[in-house]
Length: 218
Image (cartoon, rainbow, N blue to C red):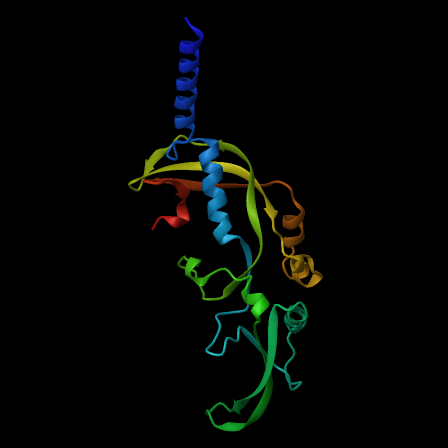
């Protein structure tokens, strides 16, 4: 066999291997890692702050005239100090049991600042039957460390699905996420931020364009 023929065969074999490796529909670790990272690049890792914004953007409010004190007030004030929220003061009518206005009460309301809004997960990405309308403040992006295992793709509800076991770590972690106000409010947050390998599993679904996270498929 001449050297030129050997070279052609080697190049052909390399091209074939490359083509197989580039198949987005193949059930392999590379495709699963790509699908998971693409999912997390959008969804990120977030915490729910307050409740559904009202017409003025207020996500939480407290009465401040001394008649009622709330243990959550220092938490929201700290988020103001971190630049994530803005506090606005106003008065609201006080009413008796029959609905008659008896006076005015002082209140403070909190809404996301421009900085805070830059960390919000787009509301269009929020799905599920238990969606409340409360906004999610995102503090980091999961990145796959290792695909540990996966099941052979199988038919489920008209789609081909594989359950993927993997580990991930957080990247691009916001500096404010390590503030004691956040780590005390969410006791698991500090460990999640510092961990280099968090175990998880997810179902991935095969589409015409390749594998995607199950939450993307309607």
